[in-house]
Length: 358
Image (cartoon, rainbow, N blue to C red; front, side):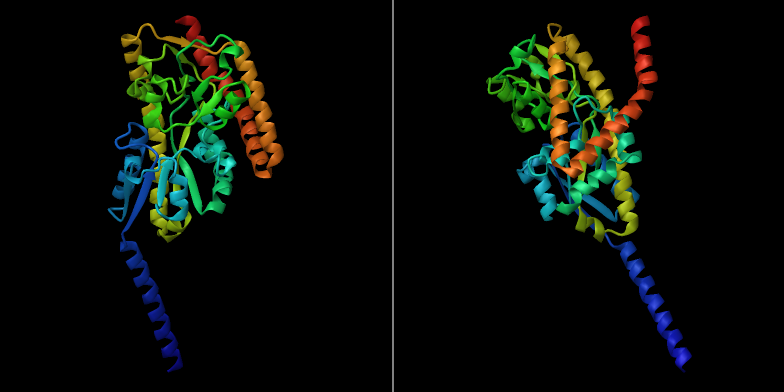
């Protein structure tokens, strides 16, 4: 009788576990995502939609993601706080927007004079990037994942030509992240303005220059109509957006849905990178044709040298004041040195050769 009772209890336990597993496998989840961007925002907004569509298809409808754009939640720069507090399960934004709350978040978007998109993705997924990023976000009940790359961003639209360091003194410019701090070191007055307000700010001389993204998104906002000088990039060579996930939300998902969400985010991020290349090429052709007077410029050598020195100084200060920042900076610098040595004899060598023969 005792053996029979034990067997019966074991069978009941197994049946209960199996039933619970089956029920969990059939359970449906709807997550709410807040994005910094407005409704139907090209490229950035398409990345979130692509991710949500993939997650729903791969899960056979068990995982759905409802997206609220900034016009709905009214807080384009409040995504960090809303996801942290659990008001939203997920977010889509850029990590360097949170530098005022958590300074070490800015390292995971793009750093001046840093890695290209290819190099940076390698650092995230095969170097220390993902582990270091999670260490930064863990105390805030958040998980962060790469959310789409723009590739190298242009250096900005200027209404006046920059010929020397003197031309930067007191210049008011929209430029976020570590690059804004670097520019501040050389005399610029940086500010961060929501995307929808950029054109008006430049048109009304509230700012003197604006850095946004690249031809595809810049053309849409119309900067080429009011600024004659378009400067090449240095400050964001691989601008990575982010998917934020509330950690408690993540832990409630079954393992298979966690993996589906992870794959959907990673695939959507890569797709955004190649879409950015495609759309930028198309938009640049349009800008050249419709605005032949536009001048593409590089910052003078003395300006580059000053910015490079300022960048080194700020990185050293950040590393000295924070043990985690020190490890992030060291990891990025070491990976860049190793990866760039190969980039120099591969992509750079190829492009240099093509420039000579064309």
